[in-house]
Image 1 (cartoon, rainbow, N blue to C red):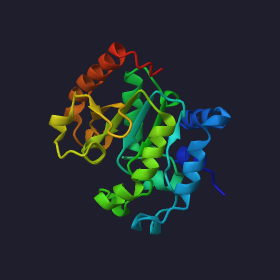
Image 2: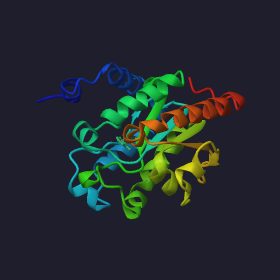
Image 3: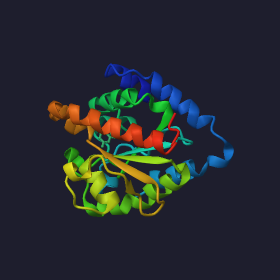
Length: 221
Ligand code: URA
């Protein structure tokens, strides 16, 4: 049987980061095993219709002790096949964004608002995000990052409970209601792939975020 690494390598995706991230998870302190409990629970989940079409749940990956947590929208086809978030083209761009912030996937924890792929890559519905929100909230509490970055309008609107547009959401620091963790919104990398002219704005948003992190001593790496 093919491993997830075989699938990734067939797609010419560098798997080094994933191997390192898994090592971090495996060697994390025993007291931090709550994440794997939440993951076990999520892997049996049938709370919404997405359970009937998934190949794998895409729970999250990276450093469970991370100071920076990144929350995307929903897994796509590649993620569903492999069971890891952001492994496709949008993931490559996310890696570049992290690199320009001076960090790698080893330094962060990445997940999505929903843990199963919506068919045909449609947006997850309010109900689907709501059904999955308990897993996400438990992940946030377990990791307890110093900063959260939300990718795109869908994740931002649902998690922050707003209807604001991306231009209203950018370069502001919100507060995650449940945990009071400072939360910043970035363009979704998939949007940037479709609208490369926005990459300049992305760079401004990165600078804004790095400034906030420095001023508040958030220690993300
Ligand atoms: N887009 C997302 O929002 N999440 C993924 O995991 C992949 C693509």
